[in-house]
Image 1 (tube, rainbow, N blue to C red):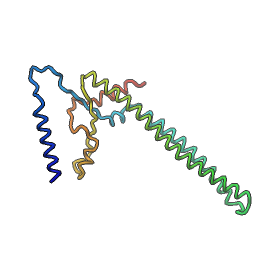
Image 2 (image 1 turned 90 degrees about the vertical axis):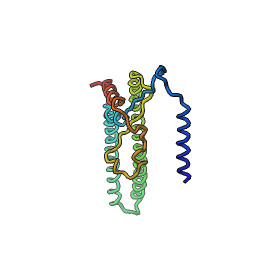
Image 3 (image 1 turned 45 degrees about the vertical axis):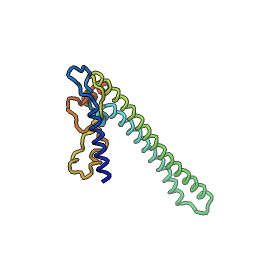
Image 4 (image 1 turned 30 degrees about the horizontal axis):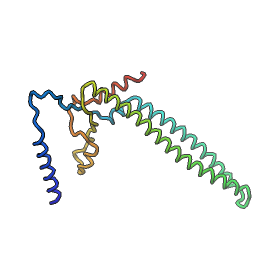
Length: 196
């Protein structure tokens, strides 16, 4: 019951607010509030520079993986040698400590490298987003738009979902006419700035 009263009071407040806004006459020369939309996920997916960033990160990740495998290979070779030694020998104890320290270092280096890769990827994606956002602004200003909203298309099969919150999550625009969609012009402008 309280839930329904809250909705009714919101509707009443909205109606009162709407009544308080004066209607625009035909003689009123104010510019209408014009908006556009852009699918930033699509922009970032189709911006060729994003492919370059992902390729550079993949190359770096593969180099780190290769280094990791070589280091692990060396540690395994030491473990094989350790298996041939007398457990009571000083050489065994010394090599066992060396292997333990080396494995701890490999583990720490792996975690550190993973964090560095993730941080670098995030920084590069933020830089790409900033470039895309600047282009969105240029496109919007050239069309005289007052605002541009992020358009997140519904995922295929959304109508079969039983969770409306999941369907609407992050969707600030429920519908937009194709004429106000800046996505393709933004992608084309960004890619035109890159060398062929």
